[in-house]
Image (cartoon, rainbow, N blue to C red; front, top):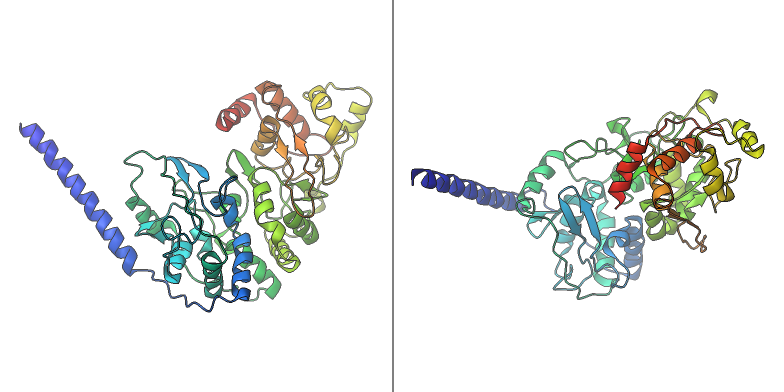
Length: 439
C-alpha cells in the first residue's frame, strides 16, 4: 500500500504541476506580447491589398485543399511527433476566425498565440512576426470581408497524448521564437533591397524551408545579420531546399536578378525549373508578385553570400562526357542508365530544353552540397508548376519502381559529375533512406 500511495502521490503531484504549468502559460500568454495594431476601414483598396499580401504569405497553399472551400483548412502536415491539420481561416463564426478581433488576428499571425495556446510553428509566425501593422490590418480586412465563410469543421490533429499537450509549446516560443516587431530596414540598405528583405524574411517566409534548424527546431538564422546559415539550404519534405545565397557551385551565384525574378513569377528560367514544394509556392504565391516586388526580392537575394565569385568558382562546361556518349562510350558508371532513361529529355549534352526539361549541366540543384533533391526527383518524378505565364505542364515520371536503389545512385552520381558539374557522390544506402521516407 505504501508503494501505491507513493506512486499516487507522485502522479498527483505531476498532474498538479502540469495543470499549474498550463494555467501559468495561459495567463502569461494573455498579459504579455499584447497586440497594438490599429485597424482602418475595410475599403475595397485595403481588402485588395490584403488579398495580395495573403498571396505573398502563401496562405492558400496550407489552408486550402482540393474539393474544399478556399481557406477552410484540412491540409495534412507531417511533423516529428505526428500529423497536424491546418485550420479553417475563413470568417465562419463557428469553425473559422469569424469571431476574431484585429488584435486576436495579430496575436495569431505574429505572436503565434490563438485560443489561449501557442500554435505549432508549422504556422510560420516566427517569420510573420515582422509584418507591418498596416499590412496586418489589410490581411485582417481581407480574411474578414474578402473571403467567403465556410462551415467546415477543423480536423483534430493525429498526435498521441502526452505529445499532444500544447503547454510545452509556450516554453518553446519563449525560448526560441524571435520577439515580434515590425520590419525596419538595416542602416544603409537601399529602398528596393529593403522591400525584398521584408518579403523574404516576413510574409514570404523563405527561411522556413531554405534555412537549416537546430536540434530544438528553431531556425539557425532568421535574418542576414544572424550568420552564414541564413538561406544556405536545408532538408525539408524529403528534398533539399537549395541555397539562395551566392558563393560557388550549388548556389544562385551565377543567376542574375532577372533570372531570379523570372523564376519567382513563372517557376522556370534558362537555368532551372521549380520542383517539390517550391512548385506549390510558385503556383499559389510568387507568380502573383508584382514585377516590382519580384525584382526587389531578387535584388535582395543577390546581396547575400559571396557576391564576387572568382572564375574558379563558376561553372565551366566540359564537353568530354557529351562526346563520350555521342560516340557510344557508356563506360562511365551510370552513363548507360542516363542514356536509357534521361537523355531523351535532358539530352546527351545535359543541356535539356529551356523552361520544359531543365538543363543538368551547371544546374545549381544538381550541384548542391546535398544530393537529396536529385535522388527524390529520380525516385518520385516531378511536374512543372502551372502559372499564368506557363499554362502547360510537363511531367517527369517516377523511377522508384523501374530502377534499383543502386541504379538510382549510379545515375544521380553520373549527372552530378558530368559536363563540368562538381558535386559529391551518393550511395545506394542514401537512396534507400530517401526511398523509405517518401513512402
